[in-house]
Structure formats: C-alpha cells, structure tokens
Length: 619
Image 1 (cartoon, rainbow, N blue to C red):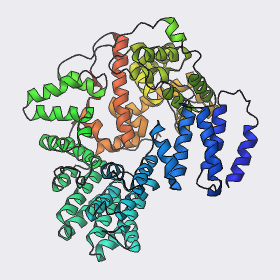
Image 2: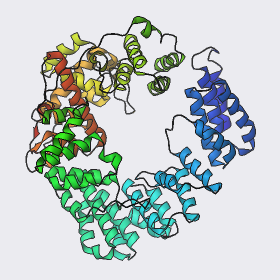
Image 3: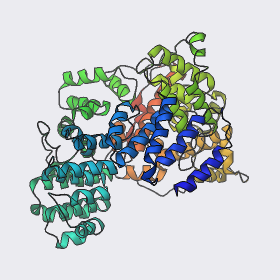
Image 4: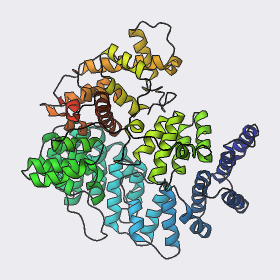
C-alpha cells in the first residue's frame, strides 16, 4: 500500500541531514510515491499544489524535470488536460513515450488531432506503453485510422513479439478477432494452422511459430501461402527471414527474397508491410551471402534516418564497390572517414588511408577547469556515486552539461579526469565528435599493473584496455545488473572457475573489488576464451561478452570463411554485436597510441572460418 510505503520512506528520510546534497531528491521521491497509480484520486488537488511548489523551488533542475514527468503521467492517467497542456512543453528530458502519447490524447480530446504525430508514436515495432495503446484505440474510435492501419499495427506487434500488443491490435475494429482464438494462435500456433481459415490468425500463428522453430514455420508457410493475401504473405516471409538471420541460418536470405521488399508509400500512408527493424535483419542475411545487389536494394528501402546511420552508409559503399561503382563508393567512404569510430576506421582502410594515433590535447587553463569545483549538479553526482548509484549520478552530470559550449565541455571533461571519473571524461569528450583528445577519450590508468598481467597471459595490453573501456569505462566499483564486478566486469561464476584454474582455494567473490585480482582474473579468462576460438580476437571478444559457447556456436553455422567485418554484423545479440565493434575499435586506438604507428582494424577483425562447436569446460 502507498501509505505503508510512505511510512517506511518517512522513517528513513528522517535520518538524512537537512543540508545533504540529495535533499531535493528526498522530497522528489516522496512526491513520486504520492503520484503513483495506487494513490486515491480524491487527493489530487492537494497533491498538485505540492508538486507546483516543488517545481517553483527547483526550476530548471533534473529532479524538477523528473517530477514534472511523473506529474504528466498522473495527469494523463486521469485525463486532466489543462494542467497537462501547461506542463508538457516545459518537460526537458523527453526520455519516454507515455507523456508524448498523452499529449496526443489531449489534442484528440480538444478536437485538434495531429494524425501524423500520433501515428509516428504508435506505428513502431516496439511494445507500446499503456498510454500509447490507449492513443491507438482512441484514434481508431475517432475514425482516424482504418482497418489497414490496424493490421499494420498487428504486424508491428508481431515484429516486437509483444503478446499484449498483438492481443490489443487484434481486438480493434477492422480486425475484431475473438480473444480465445488469438490466445490459441499465440500459445499453440500449430493448432491454429491446422483448423483456422482466418488469414490474420494464421499470420499470428506463423510468426509466433517462427520465434521458436523457424524451419517448421517455413514449412507451414509453404503449405498455406496461398491462403494469405500477397501483403500478408510478403510480411510472413520477412519474419521467417528475420528469424532465420537471428539463428544465423544460411537460408535466411532465400526467405528474404520471397518477401519482395515493398516500395515505400507516398504521403502519410501507413508504413511498408515490415519495418526497418526487420529490414536490418534482411540486410544481415544478404551480407552473409555477399548478395550485394540485395544489400544495396534493402538499404535503399530504409527510411532516410536509418539509411543515414554510419553502419548502412558503410555497407552501401561496399555494395557500390562490389557492383563496380567505385566513384559512388569513394564518395561515401570519404564522408565516413572523417568519423573516429568503428565505421570511420573501416572506411579509412577501404580508402587506403592509415589509422593513426589520436592527438593528445593540451589541458585547458587551470581556471577554466577549477570553475566547475562549486557546481551543485556535480556535487549531487558525487553524492550518488558515493552511494553506488551511478545511473543517477551520470544523469545529473549529463543534465548539467545541456547546451554547454565546446570549450566548457572540454574543461568539464578535464575536471572529471582530475576527479578520477574517467567514464565522465570519456563521455564528455565524445560529445565533441571528431575533435578528440586522446588523453581524455582513451585513458590508460593502472598501466604498470595492466601491462604486466596482460603480457603474462600473452594478450595484447591494447586489447585489454579496449575491452575495459567498453566494459566499465574504468569504474573500478562498477556492478552490472547481473552481478559482473570491477574493471573487467567478471561474473561470480566465472571468477570461481578462474580461481580453481589458478589454485586460489581461498578466493571469495568480494576479492573482485581488488584491482590486481580483477585484472589477473579477467586477462586469464580472456586468454582462455581466445584459445578456444583459434586466436580470433573478434570471436574471443564476443565470447567474453556472451559466453564462449555462443561464440563457437555462431562460428559453427558458417559454411565457408567469411570476412570478420561481415561476421561482426551477423552476431544475433544486439548488445554483443555493438560490444565487439566498440572493443576492437578501442583496441586499434590504444595500439596506435602505444606504438605511435598506423594500425589496421581489419587485421583485428580478421577472417572467421567455419569450426565445430566443441564443448569446452569453461563458463
């Protein structure tokens, strides 16, 4: 109950000194409890007054903006649109969709709907929040979307694999499917396919089946393809292809061809039968087969914002080169090569340009750096860090730097470095884009210890630095949500395994907080993972993140050697796919700084050859 929550909260809050740097958060958290959905609405007027007083006391503050967001959610839930409309334009963070959906519901209630903006919120391949589902239903009830748009929302829910959104879309006018029939298609798709003639129900069953057994789903689609409309059939094949690509099946591209990529619609018509999220998987399936015409066509079919992402600009350039269009390729490579990131490095190598060490910048004047000493937002960040609340501390840091000019950003990065907050120094320097400072962006703390343990294990210190930078950003006290600890983010089970290998019978998990132990155990494990994948830094990096068994399983799907840069795109876990790219890009920077010599990212990526997924007794 809220009352019980408040009682416990007030007891703890009473122990906090009135001048504590986080006192404003104590007040905020109490108001947030009162704003929760469980609070009786009879108190809303009194509570609204307390919220207004808080916002007046702490204008333009992060805590105030967080409270404003929570208030907007409460106002939206009770459809109190006048104060909602007053506060919504003042909300700065814009970090979730529900207030935006409530804003469109307010416009709808006022008879001033913005159909395009509302559709942009609800026609995405994600699980919608309750507010956004309410918006979609209200648009349907108002006659602002038709049966085709409702079916498109069903397809997007299928792409997101969201049972709640599938049920919601299926219940709306235009589809109006029976709830028990939808539940059966979701839970027992094979039964639905045996006895159901409704095309929408069959589509739900086929796509759900593909999530667990894509080969069976493909066989079922082959048998019943003619019972679907051309649009539903194309969508079903796109989902077979995406599911196959996630499983690294070589047939995925053939299923993609069956999907016949639809043309983009004109005007504000409903989006194509499948979204850019599915299209990303189809691009990967085509890359695996090096079907460059398909790579090009699929990338050209993206929405403009997706097509402009560095990943797709790079692979479009590679497709141009493979299709004997070198001038177009060079133009794209040249623009990308100005970026100091993974795809910028690849583009430089394709142009024959070396990857050289980043420059080390001079420190700003001491007075500019010292000007941040009294910053109250940074003091609150420090208080959060002292409590182990890094997310909250980082959010205060980032909020404080909104709109800060490049010169002050650089001085803030140096200030963070002086505090030992290397993660904030890196993050802040990265805001400056290509104007990188190697001292800030690629720090080398603990060099004496790290180089010794890395060389004892026979791994390149640059690779270890590249991995740590991605794992923890050099936050020694870092803890992940699943329990990974320290600079090298070692899982407790992995640490116990390493301790047994090293004969450390007295090891306890809390020793991972010791810098030397963390480095020794992390580099030992990294080298053992490397040994299981025939010395591939790409596969070993993937194995360090996702587990060595998965890395070997992914390699085992290959039927021929494949370029490392292509294989990196095929990794089915989005976190691991990004992790590998960041680690190896970091590694190249650290190697360049350590040696002063040009480096090759493609050499680190190497080539990945087929290999059996043999069992190895390690976590």
